[in-house]
Length: 75
Image (cartoon, rainbow, N blue to C red; front, side, top):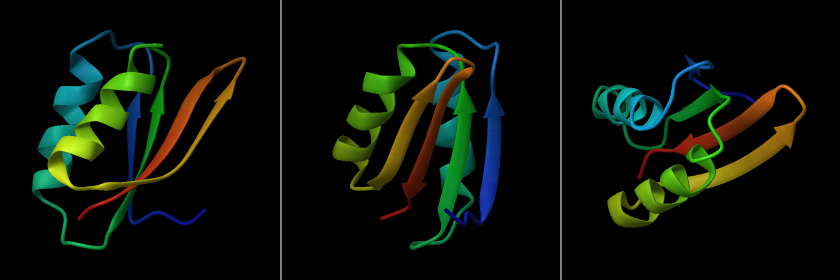
């Protein structure tokens, strides 16, 4: 899936990945997509809640042995 931005939060623990995402999304235009790479399992619910509360769209999320990938569209 294509993304306008990529955020590497691998190796970071809660709340750092969420804080980095929040700061980056502030600089994005509505409709732009960001791909996030993370290793902290808490991102799976943190990012879902972030999208729900801030009216962004979780386009996709995947989990593998090496971590998590998320694609979020700014609302």
